Image (tube, rainbow, N blue to C red; front, side, top):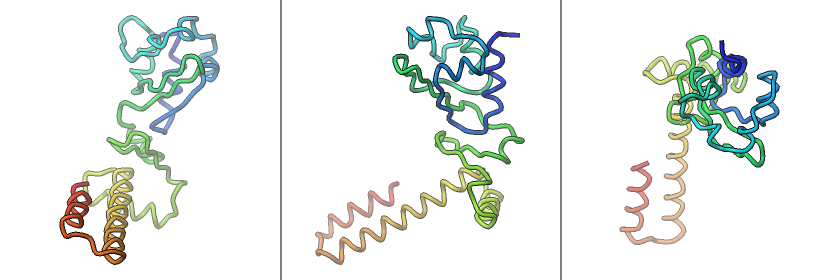
Length: 170
């Protein structure tokens, strides 16, 4: 067992897809001080497993480091592997939207049911269903804005077409 196993267990237990921590918080989880190189060299926090047992602990837990701030003594861990089925009930992570975490407690029962129905109707998980709803709402809002632009001032047909093409391409 690696001395960094407590960090691995801690990260595995987190339902979030992103976890900012101070170096002091990491040390608290570990139960011992980080080596001096962790406070001096950003490379210590790299995601290259190599011979660094600390890196192996967070990589094997399904996480990677991001936004390492050595002078500020801060690091952000980002989920690099999908959540286990048991954890998905509590938190869902949107595949390409790794910063997006959704918890049951964040939504009303009816909103959660709506997401369940949308997720059941496709291969998408809860968070992907939420992202789809947000994207649809954003597209509807863009359409409203384009309509309001047209009503304020007559735009050249080409300008309106370009705006519509841009909107539809998103």
